[in-house]
Image (cartoon, rainbow, N blue to C red):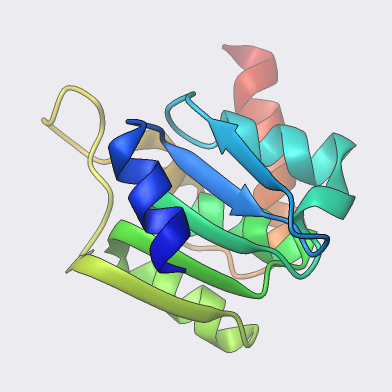
Length: 136
């Protein structure tokens, strides 16, 4: 996991995934877009994977769970994300645990955190994420 965290920070990435076959995948998009793309189009990348991520909210956690991720490290993780990951037996560690993920302007909740807050079924959360992106 340390290697993935180092890659995340040294290469200024947003997400690093080590697949079960040992290959390392690097991502730079903010938010859940990369995870959503993986869980909908390349689930083999996430199955039994290790992940290092800048920030993990509940929506990101749902994508990780649906993809079969084994372990995740987040620099910042929300309490709802941690609870969901633990509920699904995903090993989770974090640098900072927060009540919720904030939006990019820093003046409110992240929209993904808000839409997933009251839902605990990863499949339902993923559908909500897809609906959000389809309407924006």
